[in-house]
Amino acid sequence: MVFSSLTFLYFFLPITLLIYFVSPKAIKNFILLVTGLFFYAWGEPIYVLIMILSAAIDYTAGRIMHWKDNNKTVRTICLIVSVLMNVGLLGIFKYSSFFITNINAVFGTSISDPQLPLPIGISFYTFQSMSYTIDLYRRKIKVQKNLINFMAFVTMFPQIVAGPIVTYDEVAERLDDRKTTVDDIADGIAVFVKGLGKKVLLANNIGLLWSQVKAMDYTQISVFTAWIGIIAFAFQIYFDFSGYSDMAVGLGKMLGFEFPNNFNYPYTSKSISEFWRRWHITLGSWFREYVYIPLGGNRNGTARTIYNLAVTWALTGFWHGACWNFMLWGIYFGILIILERFVYGKFLAKLPKILGIFYTFVLVLFGWVLFETATLKDAFNYFKAMFGATGKFYDVKATYFLVTYGVVLVLCIIGSTQLVKKGAEYVTKFSTKLSLSVRPLIQLAIMLLSTAYLVNETYNPFLYFRF
Image 1 (cartoon, helix red, strand yellow):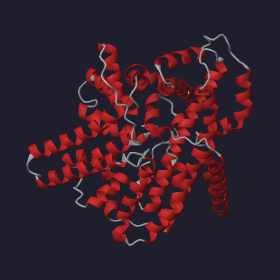
Image 2 (cartoon, helix red, strand yellow; image 1 turned 135 degrees about the vertical axis):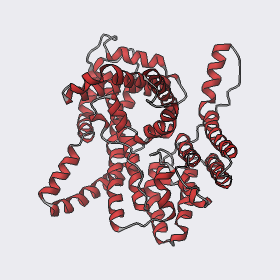
Image 3 (tube, one colour; image 1 turned 90 degrees about the vertical axis):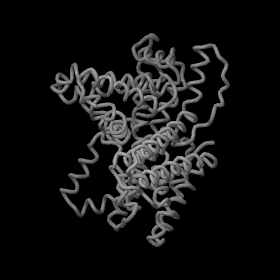
Image 4 (cartoon, one colour; image 1 turned 180 degrees about the vertical axis):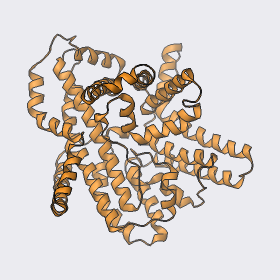
């Protein structure tokens, strides 16, 4: 089914927040649990049971670890059960078709593919829940004895289906005791509205350009069309995902939580390594904390560091989807990061900032081709079109795209930099009174425009729900 969660979330919020704020402190986490389950069940009425199962097993594993605190064997078994269960759920629902298809192709077998639908957000909530048992095993956190509190952590509706990935230690204290001030609510509304505008006004509109290019025959498109198309997708996925993350962070503030920021102007990065410190920050942190460092990180020499980076990035690519395109996408970025670290990183650091940004953005665009095309053949044909294999540099379609989407493209370029942020800071320094009067008007305008768009438009995808 189509999960129109933005529209649902947008109109579901007022009544949810009202119930939450008027509820006694003792039942606020219960309200979060119920609303989280209801929100998820709106899109996945059956698969909500999978999320409940994941959380229940991790909660039980944590309680047993605490009960048998001095028994290393029992604690280790609990950890293994938790990890295998979460990875197993991912394997069954996300990767079974991939493995079956490839086994049949290589060995000539005819294993039946169940073609199970992918539960929304399973890659996010399994990682989130699993981090609890891993950190508990490592004695980094204290056990959560209250089942409702733990389930509220796993099912928290603002970030349940598309992140940011919140580890238990980041919200542990506020799960047990939190306060929400008027300033928190005001700040939360500001961040939420910013994210809403990114998603609805920028991502959706520039996404219309990419949707048209994506539907074309890649062996016939011009160089200009190919480049403007993948640039459009780069902005679509950035404003789509960072917009949702901002909305989640804003809602978290309103509810008394401090969720981690997930993006920090990644398209202004001067290297691929910097890009990945700014893009999907919580996923990068998760893989660094629970994969790269346990493998040994950079502690055992150059060869081992390269191996650890390669494994981490292959898994990062595979986390995004069960196909060779995603695997190669992860390997591609892993190779670039290894090269920057051990080959030309010092040279890159000496380049003028604008050249570093250009280098990074172009290489990221190549990565987005692998990420967004359906097959390796499609990716290869798209790369060929970008470099003139079709024999067409410019065509009528390119003119149409420029005329139709030129304004939104410029807005996306500006929005992906710190120009707006610095402009707001300048206005604040120039006149605090002016800033305080203008900002609410801008936020109101974004809300009204976004509401009108949601009511009237049918094109409203969320790209990261497929993960």
